Length: 206
Image (cartoon, rainbow, N blue to C red; front, side):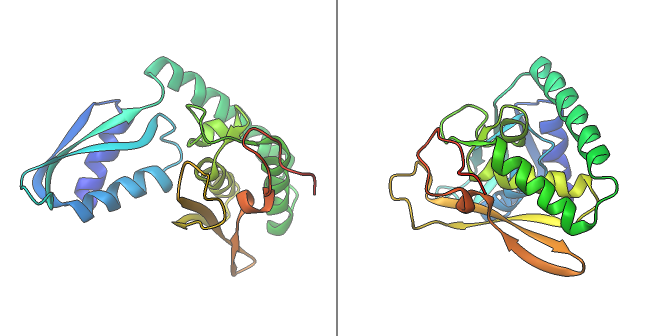
């Protein structure tokens, strides 16, 4: 699994259209690899959540390769990474003397007050969309929070499940965070904390 994940990660990093696995893998293994690429590697801002398996059996249980979909080209990607690097430099400077809890609240407040909920923008699933373009859906919001926490040396992850409060949403799935503060783990959901809002509206103030 690790070798296949590494091959897929390197392929996306190099903007390759696809990757062929040395040995066929199951469709479940591919789903896990793509989930990790999308939700645990926020630095891969160029990749979209769409991917296209190449099945080698009629029941679609075995995969030999996968093709990727990108939301930016290499030139746009270089610019995006420069902007994000600058953002994280400022973030670390502004939180240098804070406790873990203060850092968590600083990042929470920044995203809460600056990101507009949007499901349809090209970058709405990317951390770049939430942190730099200031618009994104739950996927972008949770990845942005996670990336900021990790840059500040705080353990954090994204988790995904099904939402049941907005039947008009384009996406039935939902993403939020688990963050470790002072040795304890907490669930944190920036997106739900922003509700109720209409698509395109700003989150309400604290």
